[in-house]
Image (cartoon, rainbow, N blue to C red; front, top):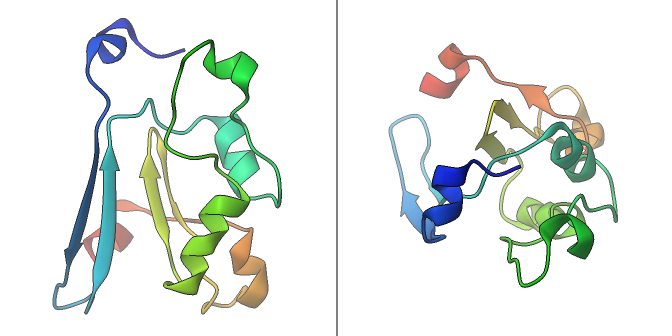
Length: 116
């Protein structure tokens, strides 16, 4: 459930491109969406599965995409996309030790990893 305060706010989606010393280029998407749930995490780690259904969203509701195969398109431009949403902080690292399993297996990030 979306907290009452957030229901009253106008939905926004913002995009940023940038670079830092430790990251030569990055793309950042910022939204005031409710954030990931356990069900969303399971869906984004799966193929052709979404946690967003019309019955869950309600009549006339909107969302920023459907997590699942659509999200996987990010791998065309990144081998290590990171997600910071709700209480979840993780990345999908296809260039790390998991190799291709990194497409569907999250690597949890701690605060030290986020600083890098």
